[in-house]
Amino acid sequence: METKVWLVDKFVDELITYPQVQEAAGFLQKNEVVAFPTETVYGLGGNAQSDKAVERIFKAKGRPSDNPLIIHIADSQQLGKFVSEIPEKAAILIEKFWPGPLTIIFNKKEGVLSDLATAGLSTVAVRMPDHPLALAVIKAAGLPIAAPSANLSGRPSPTTARHVQDDLFGRISGILDGGPTGVGVESTVIDCTENIPVILRPGGVTAEQLQEVLGEVRFDPALTDSAQAPKSPGMKYRHYAPDAPFYLVDAGKPFIQELILQKQAEGLTVGVLTTEEAKDFYKADIVYSCGHRNRLETVAEALYDTLRAFNNTNADIIFGEVFPEKGVGTAVMNRLKKASGHNIITE
Ligand code: TXA
Ligand code: MG
Image (cartoon, rainbow, N blue to C red; front, side):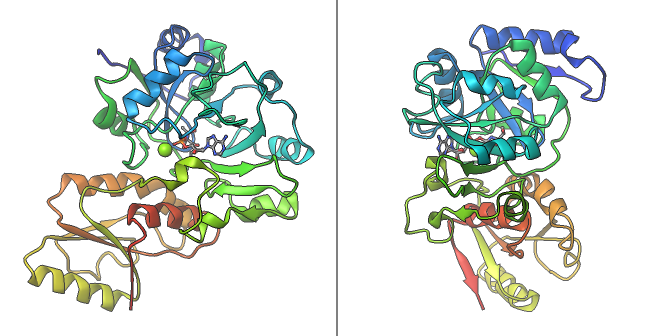
């Protein structure tokens, strides 16, 4: 399949009138699938009302069909078309955080969206992305757009058009290249069908921010106890992993350096995932820094690019540092734990 790549300057006015945006929207209207940037990661979009388009999304990604998609909208008025009610707490969240990295789970109105997009559930996940190019292409298409992250299933989510090309070139109809995304980790998923909203996936909007406006919020118990079945189907799959075995190390730098030396003595090429603060400390074969430990949003932004960068090295094994689980650090640690397959080495 031919994959068109459209380069677009996201800062220009009237993006919606640009030929690249119009052409991409035309593809979406023909039920073809197109990748576009959001403020979190690149998404692979398709018409959420079309089984054909949604099938194409699942096929291009190699995604298990029991994992539902997030429906992206450009205008909160669209919501009433496919959700059966907007609970008061959801209305508060919409007012405060949309457009933005927050996905809200609602009860679904039957018969409007493709059942494949919602994996046959009675609920639907919706978000309004805070990215001019995403909003322009959704508006131009005039459709609700189902969009998972635009990576091959299991790999780190894409934060640049290059990442999308590496995974999906030849498998999708087009890629709108609007430069690197900003937040770097995916949206927070919150279930508002229950009286006390439940965070199913930590992400760009922090639990602290949600607590501030909602009062009480819960975490899906599966987030802290890997023996529990997660309420968000996608959370049970291995995800974000680099090619080489990846271990998180919850210990000080000298202990990590010891591990590196041990593995090198066994003849392995060893990588370490660290930050600016510690990158000069380690003597490993590959030392990659993903931002500043004291500014966790920089770590979120660079995380997937750094995980992917290890795939262009000959690393046999990778050790990663851990981060404090507060603010966006909760999302960063959620992704790192998954990338490691929950293999965490302690001192
Ligand atoms: O930031 C993001 O959310 C990105 C950008 C492209 O918008 N999208 C994204 O989509 O991360 P995806 O498909 O990679 O992750 C969607 C998550 C999955 O864990 C899925 O199981 C969950 O949302 N989800 C979707 N619908 C759901 C539902 N009705 N109930 C519970 N979880 C749901
Ligand atoms: Mg994903």
